[in-house]
Structures are given as C-alpha cells and as structure tokens.
Length: 170
Ligand SMILES: [Cu+2]
Image (tube, rainbow, N blue to C red; front, top):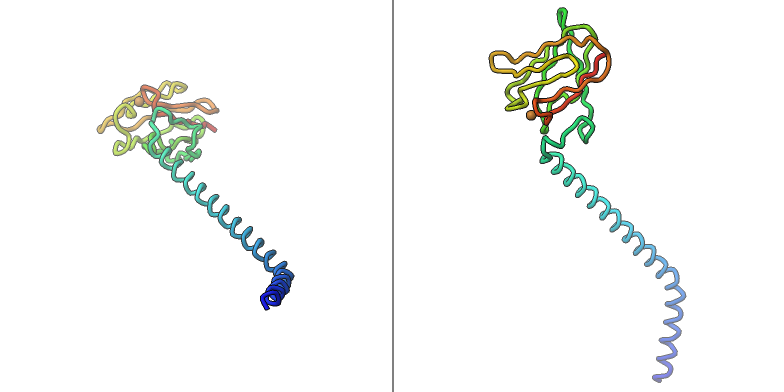
C-alpha cells in the first residue's frame, strides 16, 4: 500500500514536473522580471539621490569656486537697446553675478544697473579690465557705464575676483 502510494506520488511528481517545466520557466521569467524591476528601482533611486546631492552641492558651493564655466548654464542676457544706449541689470544669484553672460552690441554705450538688493559687500565693486571700468556702486549711484569698443568676450569681476561674469560684444 505504501509502495503504491509512493509510486503514485512518483507519477504525480513526474507529471507535475512535466507541467512544471513551463511553470518553473514562468517562475524564472517572473523572478528575472522582478529582478529587472528591482534594478530599475535602484537606478531610479541613485538618479534621484544624485540629483539631490548635486542640488545641495550647487546651493552650498562657495562663491570662490564659482566661475562662468562651472555648472551654471550660460544664461546669456541681451542688453536692452534704449535711446542711444543698451541697458542691462546686474544682480547676484547662486553665489555669483547674474547674468553670467551679458551680450552687448559694439560701440553702443552700456548702462549696467546694479541691483543693490542682491549685490552686496565687495561684489559692489565691479571691474571690467578691458574697458577700464573699476567702480564701487552705492545707493546713490548704482549705474556703471562703459562703451564696448571691441568685439569679443571679456570678463568682469568683483574687486577680489570672487564674483565673475562674461561680456560678449557683438
Ligand atoms: Cu569680491
């Protein structure tokens, strides 16, 4: 009796195995699919983590390491032409001057209005060596004027070179 049961069990087992072939296949497919899901989740996790780390780095980086060529996108701002001049506002954002890149037209006087609400301390001294500008703006005089007489890319900075930016003359 026991033997018979065993035999039956064996038969059932082998039958089960026969059908199990595809079952186990399905199982392995399932498990590899869930593995894929896990690794995709892991990738997502690291991407999100990376974005968080980068934004923290970006927010807390010191102005000293800031320069036009680092992570800041070149948000070029075109100076607005007004009667006989072109005006642009210079402010302070993310540890540096904003805009980082200012586009101006050659031989038209530039009127750079410094936003004293954001530009503080030594950043209020603006130097544009190429055009002989070295000016400390105050609450009574926050405008820097110069005429870009030459085409090209020229840097500007604060008195200590901590804050930097670029002027493109076209
Ligand atoms: Cu400075």
